[in-house]
Amino acid sequence: MSLKKHPGLKVIDHWLNYQLAQGDIPGFQVSIRLRGDLSFSKAYGYADLKNKEQYTRAHLGRIASQSKTFTGALTLWLNSRGQIDLNEHLVNILTEFKNHKDPKFKRIKIIDLLTHRSGIFRDSIDTDYWGKREPFLTRTDLTNEIASSRLIYSPGLFTKYSNLGYGLLGLALERCSGKKFATLIREFFAEKDLDSNIIVDSDINGNFSHGYLRRQMHGQKFKQISHRTTQALCPAAGFCSNTDSTTDFFHKLYLTSSILPKQQRTLLHSKKWPVKNMKSEYYGIGTIFTDVAGDPCVGHSGGFPGFASQTWVELKTKRTYGFIANTSITKTFNAIQSMAVILRAIDNNFPSSSWSSLIVSKPLADNYTSTVYVIGKSKALAIPLTGWMPADDLMIFSRYKNHYLSNQICGYKNVGEPLTFNIKDGTVIAAQFGGFVSKIAK
Image 1 (cartoon, rainbow, N blue to C red):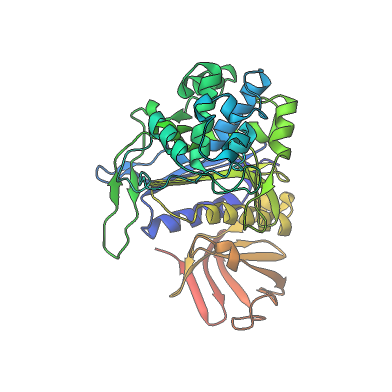
Image 2 (image 1 turned 120 degrees about the vertical axis):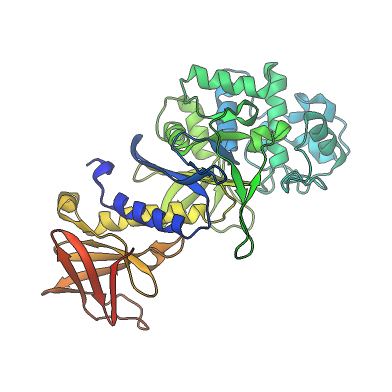
């Protein structure tokens, strides 16, 4: 059945509107696809707080380190055309580094840059471009920075994230092709007929959301961030897009053969190593391998002054999730995870044949929290809306006579007590659970 009819999408919409009302984020976009079909797409809040410009699905925002997925795909595409060898040593391409002061540097291969196994510094030693105090590195700055610093680890030893490494990768792609990185991306996208709403920051047009620093103290306003180009670090963090476009690309890249041929797709899915000091996360070719609430997924996150983003593909369900916020928050992965858990909870408790008969309540509030209920003939779900991880407190009830019961709730709460609803003409007016009555939030 089409995901567009999934009752969980209504729950997700209620929850996201609730989060917007808390005032911690000016605006954000969310997209969900099933096997490429755009099942849910919506923008919330403002793209421009000063002028009260509504955030739309079309607005572009920074996707920061998700850029590495696009750079990785570009590199594999060039590899399929015989323009770059993934096992080539970097110094054979960027010959200015042949006499690097660290003898281990000559062992770095292109595949090491792609997979964060080069041992290079993550960002730099003393440049504060992430804090917006200095401009991003130019090609000359990057070259000088790399030439003056030693490796942290030997190449191929550990997976240690490096934006500088992806900057170097961009220089190598330019040297091999004789073209600027932005030109390579445009040609790649044109040949594959990919979405024109995925661009590098030097090509930003007028339909771009403002980014904001989060308020740090109660009552402090959001601070708007001015636009800057990432220059030599564009391959690592310089892409801009919207969630409709990122989810389309990620779906095609990981679940279809429309972007890469078989050999390169095999490399994309198989080349991965554990991230140093992480228990269950792996990094591959511009790809993070992890799980969303127990199900394997691939994708990438992105953080930039004024923006935060995630795009993830669940390999089992073939669902793709995208989230872009125009402020720096750390809860974007939590949001993706909760959306996945909400959909899965309904999948596991209500057969799709019953979806049309389910009642999804509006947010019902008491003095402590707001909750959305999904009510069926034999079961009910209670999904608290508070916070970016409502799925952590999701409760499942089973029908007993004229009410619902749950023996799975924490003993400190109302375990074993009845949950009843006041329903009129298919609308839930109120719910009573234990000593609390919740009503439609106003």
